[in-house]
Image (spheres, each protein chain N blue to C red):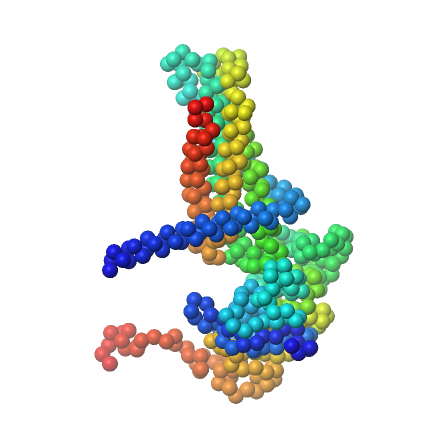
Length: 267
Length: 262
């Protein structure tokens, strides 16, 4: 394993219900870098992220993090590894029966013996970092989508993880919240010296903040490079994706029988 | 061909049912294994005791009062035929502590607290809260399931006792205050006839068994629910139906074991 890489994925294959979801994936996530995995909905991005988190076992290949092969770990080993990770879920996944404060304090209370006054200071620092110190007593149901995502971000970095994973962090956000979240992701990654993986299909926002991008389609990597390289790419798929074109290698029409046949017309 | 398909469908259903029972048994085993943390942090159980036990009190008290009043009325009419109106207290008390208290309280508990548990855990699953907990290296069975399980087991006998006590008061209101049965006979015959070990303790054991089964069904259904609106709705319905049937079947089995020949 390269000494500079926190996470390495080699020849990762995953089959679900006899359908290949991931095929021969090779990726490297260097320490301190922010790497995006992009692609259309259903291309296997989230499945890949779940392999990195150890939630799924590959059919072949492996994910190695910090020197450990994830699918070979027992439950204690997996939980020890997950304490070094943070994950931001698509819609925040805040605990709805807890206040904002308790959500951020959750991991500190579960995994440390810190006294409550220290936890208070840490929670305030995390909430201040996402600009929501004033919302500490609110319940998740009282937050807007953008605020909930920021609270979830504070909770994700509560124990200063070495790897932060983001599953569609921009989904369903207004343009201002999107910029705020993007900026926070970059700043928190740099401030914590962490490594981040962003799974997204929001190309414009992601290219502003990431260091490297992998493009996926149908379970394989179809392109990779820095944001500038991808903007200049002449590959048909990348061009269609980056410019949001309606038709191209990814067809507008889902495959089906001949149109005339569906309209009961003679060929 | 149709016969083969029918046999195949039946076989598929049987295999599925057996598989589900196995998964539920494993779930129960894991809940017991991971219960230590709940007792070390007893405040987690106390919090759940409030939502399952305390929040069920109103329905238990109101239902208990009316069931007791009906028992008082019906009992009086029946006993009067044999000139045994003074035994009304015994009839109401034995009916409640042996049968109606544990069974009715468990049925109400399944509809009120059991369905709420299933819906809550099902929605936690649908909104990825359980996955988030897993990713935070916190075992959801230890953190979510075990405290709720023990809260259900603890609160069920207390709710059944409350149901029986309020029911006896309901029987007193109708029998003594309203109809005019002698108050002294009502209470003294009850005191003489109700045996602590044979009647009250057996009722407590029944409610402990019902509490364990209902809470387990509710938690398992929530944890196993497909993470969709339809999935959570189906799981909630299954909790109420399965729990109710389990309570009634177990009641027969327990009654046969406890009171046969007594």
